[in-house]
Image (cartoon, rainbow, N blue to C red; front, side):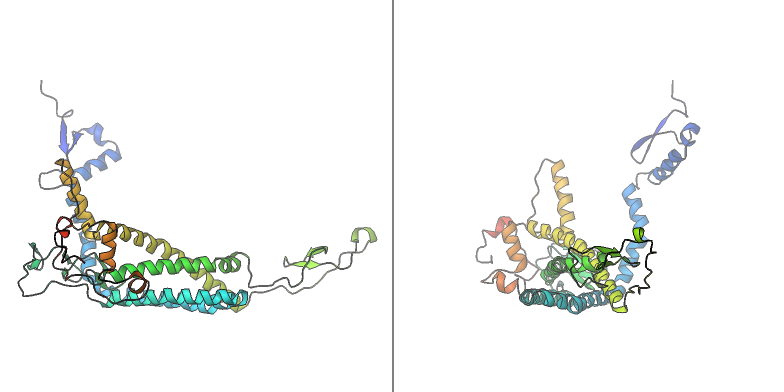
Length: 387
C-alpha cells in the first residue's frame, strides 16, 4: 500500500524532512521557519552555500566599490592615533619616569625611539611600495592560468584584487589600513609593522601600568598626604582625607559638642581631568591594539612558518581535504621548512643579517622577481638559483 501524502518524506536541501503540507509539521513556528529556509535550496542548481553567497553579494559589492575611497581615511586615522599615543608618552610618561629614575628614563627613551622608528618606517613602506603586478602586454612564460577578470596570463601565487581591480604577485590580502594590497614587494614591511606595533603597545603597557593604575584607580593626581602619619591618632574629614590629631579631646566625657570645621573640599583641576582622560585613552587604545594586532601577527607568523599567504591557506586547506578523500597526502609546494621560509620572507639571504636587515629599517627587496617560484622538491636540484 502506498504511503499517504501526509506521511511521505521528501528530500529538501539534502535532508529528509516530513511532508511540508503536513499540518502537524507546520503547526510549530520553528518547524515552519526551517521549511522556509530549506525551500530556498530545494533544487539541483541551488545549495545553501550559493544562497549565502547571494545574500552576501551586497557586502561584496560595497567592499569592491568603496574600499578604495575609504582607504585614505583609514591611513589618516592610523597616523592620528599613532601621533596621539606618542604625544601622550612624551607629555605624561617622560616626566613621570624622569622623576623616578633618570638612568631608567634614558634606557626607555632609547628602546622607545627604536620601536617608533621601525613602526613609522615599515608603515610608510607598506603603504607606499607597490605590491608587484604581472607585466602587461608581454608574454609571460611563467603563467599557469588566465585571470577570469583581467583576461590576462596569471603567474604562480598571483591572485586578482577586486579593490585594486588588477592581479597582484603573491597576493596576501588588501589592507584598508594601508590603502594598499599586501603582496610580493611589501609583505615584509606589512608584517614588521604589525610586529613592532605589537611590541610597542606591550612596551607602553608594561612601563605605564603603574602610572595608569595610580591615575585611574588611586586618584594620584589629586590631594596627597605630605607628612607621615605613623603613630598619630587620625580622623577623617568631610572629604574623606586623613587628618592627624595632635590634641586628644574626649567629647563624650567633658560634655563639649564636637567641633565643626568648615574645611574646603578638594576639587579636581582641569589638568588632572585632562591627564585622567589621556591615560584612559592610552589604556583603551593600547589594549585594543595589543589584542587585535597581536592575534593578527600570530596568525601571519603561522602562515610564514608554513610558507603560504592568507589566500593560499584556504586553497591548501581545500586541497588537503580533497586529496585526503582520495587517500592522498597534500603538501604545500612552497614550504621549504620553517627556518628557510623565514629566511626567504625576511630576505636574510646573501650575507644579510638579522641585526642589520630586521632589527633596523632596511629597504632590501625580496629574492627573485615574483613570477618564478621553486617548488620544495626542486629547490635542492637548483642549488645555483637557491639563495
